[in-house]
Length: 342
Image (cartoon, rainbow, N blue to C red; front, side, top):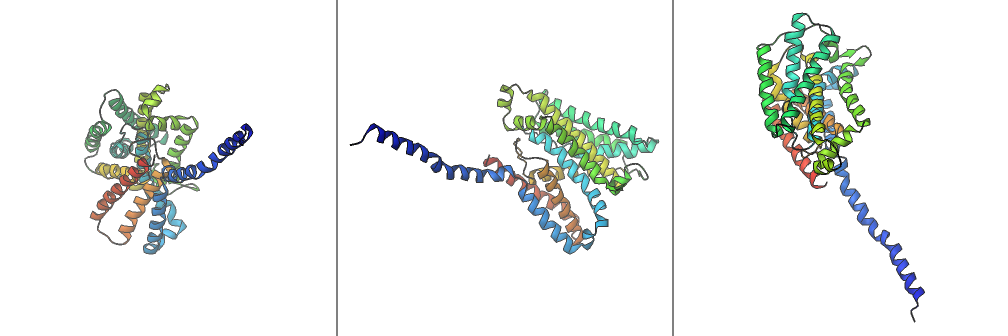
């Protein structure tokens, strides 16, 4: 005969058995979530493969004396990728294609306006170009948030305006040798110059992460309705994202000036394409909320190493743009896969 005590014991055993049955399902979910949390893994693997391939084609890449120059030429790629990452993380379709012309406008302001007119002090010219970059980002943010324009349309308009301004102030290349940016392409004392430019941008990001802005940014990108319901000022956060993008793009312009030591407004389109390809290749979801700076750094490094590999192998430069396009497609596909795993 079944007693009340037996029933109670059976129910207790069933209750204790539930976690064990649920355990594999939970573990499976965690395994499926890994690609979403570590969306940079593919870019990291690609960087390793391209490093090995470059080392077999160009032995100089293994020489530590060459590394500061290598990092200096890498810096503009990384910085435009960081600039593009921020508004994408903020969601709302926040693709900023104006980061390329913002960088080249900074380059033209330095070479063709400030340095050409004797304004050579770092303490004067650096704040000017950084403030210009932030102002451009704020305008983009206002157009998107309060102008209710699609981010692609708003930043496309800014793209053309900035490209036109850069061409106006520098219709032909203006040399800018012997200025304070030149060391940033090599060594600044005992430190590679790229550590200062890339590291400066990442330091700003780290400070904002400590201030919880990055978490708020990703929350807005992941679900802006829920963030708004929780009292987050979604519009202000997105304007801040575009302002930060402008700041990073201005630093990219400084790094570009360090490398080429002349004004080059024609590079705007190239760097906008590099930025988008690097961000998507690094695993940042174009829908917002997923991804981060590590993936963008790796994505930009992969694109740069691919360019170096093609150049070292003697491949015509016309194929470089083709390679950028292929990587952009690959990145978008990976971004979509990460989003579906969300």
